[in-house]
Each structure stands twice: as structure tokens, then as C-alpha cells.
Image (tube, rainbow, N blue to C red; front, side):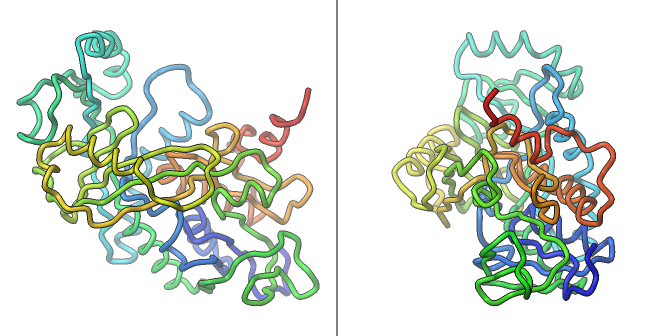
Length: 366
């Protein structure tokens, strides 16, 4: 770490990846500043109204599946520690998931997969029929129940992460955009002025790929939050291109669309179609008013793998991001790994496939 700087680590990006990285650095005793073009903890793709945390289906093991399984297993303890530190509830629970089986053929396929699913997730996995879930919650002939799927209220999480970082002394630079990855004589150039820092954590979501020259870009998503207190114990519902997520605060998250390469933050008829489909499947939602509509740009690498580690030609820059639609689950583990790189103590078990160099090599022509 470069000493003589005002700050040990500048974290560019105030979403889930940036805030978990900042908190992990602060816990290591590093001096941290967090910069974001908007308000830290209150903007970006991390604020999705859905917040579904679902494990991968059984199949061929990969580094991503291993990381996600480890991250989901550690998440309850990680979130409990954050709640204890901040006194804030994060809306985390594990009510399981109903995956809609719309016809007999879908049910037959699910029954064929059930032994493997039970081996991975336990005997609670089952094929359910109406009457097995709360009345009015789902209108479908059958559904597959997976017990390990959880939910998390993303806006509450980000607010708690910001509070934890502030309490530990992080400098919060709201409205400060990073202008250049290479520090000048006066430090890193921000739209609010220069800042001296030993290292940079680049956690600006989809924008990080272009800034770092990495393959990947935005995936536009839209979702909504409706006012409804779900029946007690109601599981999440998953259909084709659709999540219905009951939250503890008397709201339900509904989403989400996915458009690769779209870089605006507009809302359109696609979201209204998602809301209509959710109401058709979930009778108790039919009169529920829409409280808010959301659009965000998910960071999508060339693969679904996260990108965490130093840039080969700029080792002072540690990229932390990716994960596409499972970023909320991966962010704590990725933040810990990024903090290790920033503290110049690289995690010994971090997969090479997640390093920026691997993503660059995958793009290079043969």
C-alpha cells in the first residue's frame, strides 16, 4: 500500500460491490473514501425491488456455482453481523421458491430432476399442487418447491452498508464521478476535485467494463414494487422471465426484464407486461397498487463470472463487479476478495477465471 496518501483505498462506486468492498477494507484497518456520481447507497442496479437469492440448479460444477453456493451459505451470518453493527433490519429470509410448472410436460420434467435436486437441497424439495401454498398466492396447476431460495431487501441493505462504512470513518463523496483510472500528480481525478489514494477499487457496475477495457457491458432491467402484505410464509414465485418476491415491509417486488446492451434507464411497456403477468399468476396482487418502478443497468461480463482482481497493466486498480443477475448474493464474497487484493494479500483460493486477466484472455483472438 502506498503510504503518504490521504487515503489508502478509493472505492469508485456506491452500490453493493463497492460498499461491501469498502466495509471489508475498513475492517482491515485501511483508510477508505467512497465516491459515486449519485448518492452512495441510493442509486444503481443494486437497488432492484426484487432481491431474489436463488442457488444454481444441480449440474456440472463450475467455479461460479461453487462461489455462489459458498456465498449463499455464509450470507445469513454475514447479514446478521451487519444488522448487529448498524441496528437495521435487512429484510432477509429464506421462505423458499415456487417454480411454476404450467403443464403436464413441465411437471414430468421436474419430477425427473427431483432426485438430483433433493440430493443437493434436501428432502424439502417437492412438487406441490394448489392447496400446498397460501390461498390466493399462486394460480398454477403445480409448482416445484426449492427451500434454499432467499430474499433480501436491497435498498435496506445498501442503507445499512453506508451507515456501517460511515461509522467506521469512511469518507463519503456523494456526487463525485471518477474521471480517470490513472492518478495524476495530485491524485485520482474526481468530478469534485483530486484525491490522493494508494489504490483504486473500480466498482462502478456496467461502466467499469468500458473504463477498464474489459469485455462486457450493461444489461438493462426493469422491475416494480407493489403494496401488499403477502400471506405468512409465502414463498417467492419464479416463472419464465418473472420473479414475485414478498418482502417483510408489506411490499412485493415484481420483475424483471433483461435487455443486453441497452444503456439507458428508461421505463416502458415491457415492465407493464411483467406487472400484468405477475397479477395474472398471483391473485392477491391484482388490486395491489404500484408504489415504484425501477430501471437499472446490471453489470454483465462476457461470461456470467464476476470480475475481481488487479488489471494486468494497472495493478493499482482492483476491479470488483459482474455477477449479472446474482450480484447481491456474490457481493460480500467478492468484496472480501477485493479487499485482500487492495491490502496486497491476494486470497490464495481465488479462482483464476475471475481475474481481469482471464476475462481479457477470453476476448483475445486465437
